[in-house]
Image 1: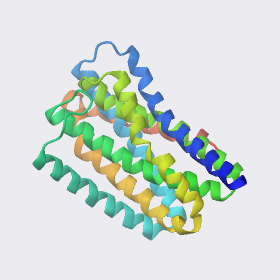
Image 2: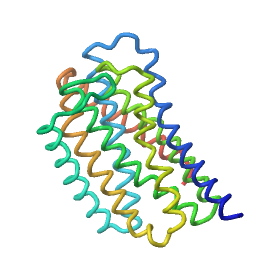
Image 3: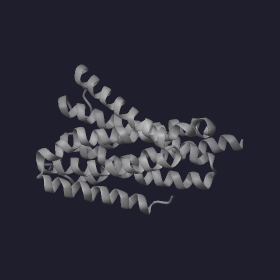
Length: 248
C-alpha cells in the first residue's frame, strides 16, 4: 500500500509542476495591444530566460556526468535541426490559431520545451528516489522554474495571435512529460539516473539553438541591437536570480 501511495505522491507532484507552466501566460492577460516593438521585446525576454535555463541545465548535467551532458547537447542540436528541416519541408500545421511561419516558430518552441520537460520529469522521479524531502524540494524548484518558462512560450505565441488561454494550455501541454516520466524514473531510479545528464544536455542544446536561430532574429527585427542586448541580459539575470532563490 505504501508503494502505491508513494507513486501517487510522485505523480501528483510532477503534475503540479506541469500545471504551473500555464501560470506563466497570465501576465499577458493585461497586454491588450501588442505592437511589433513588443513582439521584439517578448522574443528578447524569452531568449534571456531560455539562455538562463540552459545554463542551469548544463551546470546540473556537468555535476552528474559532464561527458554525458556534452553528448546530450550535441544530440539536442541534431534533433532540433532535423525537426526544423522536417517542418520546413512538410509545412507546419496550424498551432494555437497560428499559420505559416508563425506556426512553424510556435511548433519549434513547443517541441523544444517538451523535450526539456522529459529531463525535468526524470529529475523529479530520481529526486524522490533519494527521499521525500529531497523530492519536495526539487518539485518546488521545478514548479516555480516552470512559470517563467510558460511565460517564454506565451511571449512567442500571444503576440502572434494566440489567445492567452490557449497559450496557457499549450504551455501545460509541453510539461505533460513531467508526470509521465517521473513515475518510471522513480520506480527505476538506478536505471534512469545515468541518462539524466544526457537528457539535461539535450534540452539545453535544443533551447540554445532555438534562441540563436529563431528568437534573437525576431528581437533584432523589431529592436535596436543595444535595446535587444539590455532586454536579453535583464531577462537572463531575472531568471538566474529566481534560480538562486529556489531551494537546492
